[in-house]
Image (cartoon, rainbow, N blue to C red; front, side, top):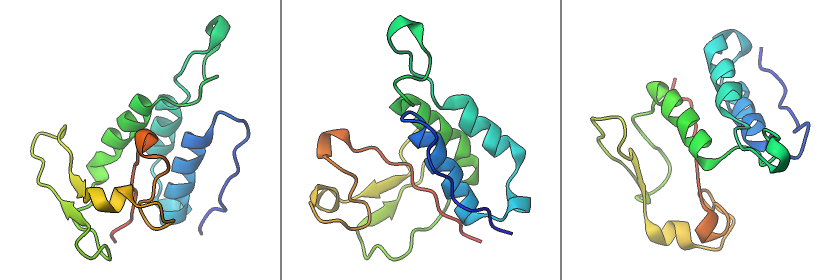
Length: 131
């Protein structure tokens, strides 16, 4: 059974909500290990706002990368349908980039796959099920 997608419950939880929705969209309930859910919420909402209030700034890009690195154990080995715009890189040490996207593709203003917002703010964590 697939789980319905969730809405954000505050202004700050967009990253954990997006990650939980990605996992629940790709996998059935019984296929999702509890550690995946635990780590998503453990690493997200890590910013500190005024008056030392945790989570007020949402999730930092470093925390999103940390979740991505943790999920990297489930890493994919192929990208389909991108017609030469994407190349999988061999990364042996686990800290190197494992995906290369052509700059022309990222710089386009169109609303297409990999159009990730204003260029200076672009960050992405791509999640896809292979099996």
